[in-house]
Length: 335
Image (cartoon, rainbow, N blue to C red; front, side, top):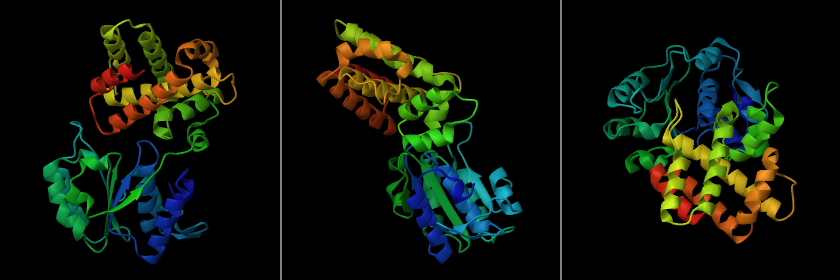
């Protein structure tokens, strides 16, 4: 995955490549941004650029990996001796033994390449004792080592960790960039477009949606709007919130499911406002136009604008790791 194969983040990629070419890249980096926008891919692309056997300048990148030499292929397969991937274990956390192993490995001189690279995915899952163990290494890493911490929740990291590493921020992808990543010959283009719009700039979310979760998430979104509009008292709204959160799907979590449903709700409310204004141009959910017309009678105008803003606040709350139930209970009181 060379830099040129990464979709989006062009300015940031050029900045990283230029720093590599000038040997001015900080030895400890924090990649921060929403889930599913390519932070991990860029970390791998950087590891390749630092260890490629045929590295060269390929405009617009001052340094670019070939993507096909033995080093690049091994890094892609995670079999390169000098690139260590640290990820949450079965318990969902990164424990101190994993961090101590990474620190130990980073202290050695490179065996196959030019630089030892440690990529810590979901760095917010590093337990506090392990974060403390990492402090000295982040501040004074070995001369030939590179640490890359990847997270969508930097606030969970200790302030002492954040202060020792250079932060690089990744923004959301555009809808067209998400379509470019997700689209394929075997996928219905209209489904891809709906998923890209509903995903909020995250290719990861869009991929989850087109894998069969789009219909379920949008169904839950339609359901909560209908149930709230029909609720006659607070109990009715709480029942709507309970149904909206629902049970997590196999292999998923309540947080992930809520993000998908809130993203679908954002897409629906945006379309409802367009329909209420008498326009069908630019709709993401064209396949449920009749349902949008029905919802526009309740959620058109001021109520719809307020609901749209409230869903945005709810998504922010999910990113801060608030309880899905608490978020849903609050949201139904705002719709």
